[in-house]
Length: 215
Image 1 (cartoon, rainbow, N blue to C red):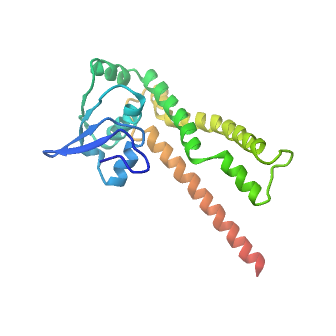
Image 2 (tube, rainbow, N blue to C red; image 1 turned 90 degrees about the vertical axis):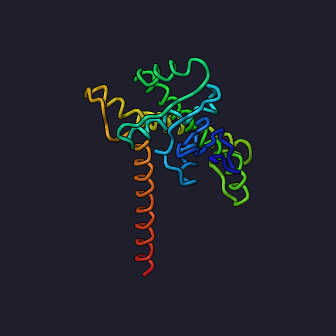
Image 3 (cartoon, helix red, strand yellow; image 1 turned 120 degrees about the vertical axis):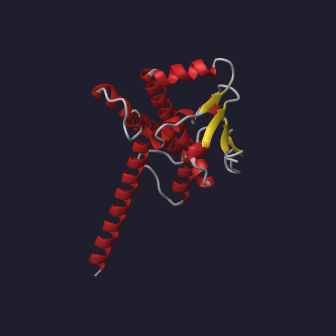
């Protein structure tokens, strides 16, 4: 089972006679497959119940990951009437594929931040600790101010991540290269790891300088 107690994405993985069958492919499916120890190479069939965002949000990313990992991947896709035509048009039209991919990355940037970051809670914590934002009244005005700042940052951050995600497609279009060994998802992961590594190094350097100053 792919769903968790904390989140309930509409995706279920079933192994039947050595074949992996994935029922729907919600956002976060690949992450939950990693947690459950399910290899993407085991997915041989995907059944889509209906073309709704909650059921197919992770489909494009899954196709791209499997395509990068496997030499000649073969996946059978089943769904409502018109599924075959829709998928063929989507995968063969690089412009449409890139536009949808960009919009999904941009949208889920806002979605992830809205789930993990609560301006009201930050405002309350600031008020309880005696902190404040200069020129802004505590309480709701502070929360609204933080929310507006986060919204602006999300716009440019989401735009940047969207460009990074479709960078391989842009490279293919400019260089006329049909196959690349790295995909947009891989680049996003590499960027995240690089930023986290830089943050850790900066923290270690700060601690080292502080200890040297104390001595």
